[in-house]
Image 1 (cartoon, rainbow, N blue to C red):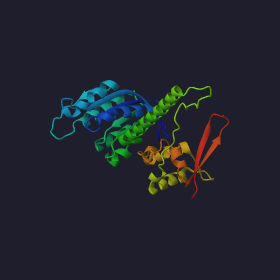
Image 2: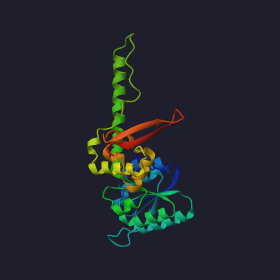
Image 3: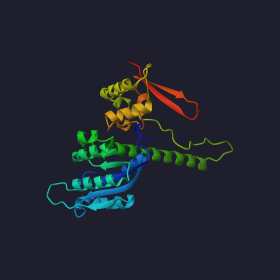
Image 4: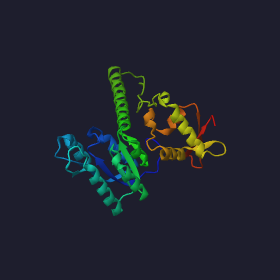
Length: 281
């Protein structure tokens, strides 16, 4: 799973999108991100489709099989999609067909909805831009910034292009210089290394991780990584290693000298448990 560990795998999800507050150019990466956590069995997007402001959504809706819900703007300057999304969310909740909701919006008006869905035992994932107000962020089980998804997707595309260039150069050299000697074999995949992002981890975030380790550490000071990841999200739903340039929590911790990683072998040789300790504790 990309990002921090979380018990949201294989959920049946209702994806509700506020067309007024989410850029259509990001929907491909967003839908790929949602697939990490479960299956989007319901996909709806709300907006005034008579308005030219949402005309760019037509292609993405067809590509990702998202159902548009018409909501007219009855009052100038007012976002009328909020009430329609909230009403539909409650209808879906009482249908009992979902395990969780994904709310795509940067609007704090959905804060109470997120709280109500969690009270009903639903997992709630919020996705929005960095301008999203804090109340909506903390009301979700997990909140993901669109900018983080976009940057991660761009990084993956850069890696794929770099790999293609390596393979192309290898093919060219092989064709131009045939010989009886074995040619240097190009790797199937270019070596991917985590960006040097440790310097981007601010002292407050490091202390936040250290405090969380202390909360669940055993007598030797070690905390189980999976449990730590879940605790970080419970305390701060928008915590995401990709914000600091790392794809997962483990590489992030390894980059910080303050923390010590201990990989423990279990009875099954294919399963390893990772523990982390704060050296300064």
